[in-house]
Length: 287
Picture: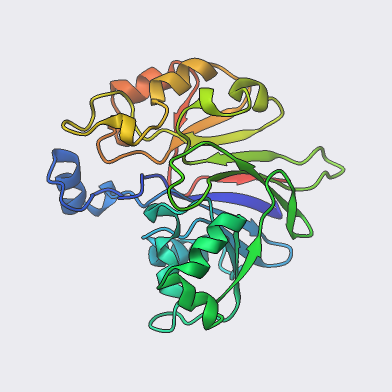
């Protein structure tokens, strides 16, 4: 295996435990580190050229970088790919500045609107001005080559785009004598599958692994909050759409209220439809 993807986080932007929450699940996570969950993040590794990338710079960036180092010790970070401008997906960039790591021209791949947001707003603009990061623009639907054996296709998806647009990604390796390259679809955030300009089931034909937005299991998980203001497809809806599809589907980006964080009837309900829940450290070959 020369090219692989590694799941480095499974929680929604606030992580688990979440600030200001003292529910039973967050309290347990504070008391037992094994119950904690880092924010959704994907590592991409090309072992042949000894390089690694992250999709998204989460608030857990420090821990996820260390985990990536342990899982692929000879593959230093060669860049970060951003999905959008919500805190769980770019706030970790702060660790690249001169107060911390002080990186030098680390490639950061982003849509033009996301790059504009970083350039026009402090403290992110300082990372650009001091050359801690080097912005590389992504064109929707246009595949880029991260390494000789690793390719990435950015795909626009509908989401709350207050500050930037939102991208999902298809990562793939290259065809070999042993068979065609494997494809992984990474979509941690989307408002609703029906609002996308593609049919999800049809799109996943030919995709080997799909890591999909599973923020909420059901409506009413957050009393007093209007989920119309923070739209995501319910895990139950996604599972019913994709029951027993010929693709390895795991739900990620789980809110701290989501019962899928722990074994129970909700996980069993998903499993009965052939759908799983993302597990930190899971690895998928892409070649």
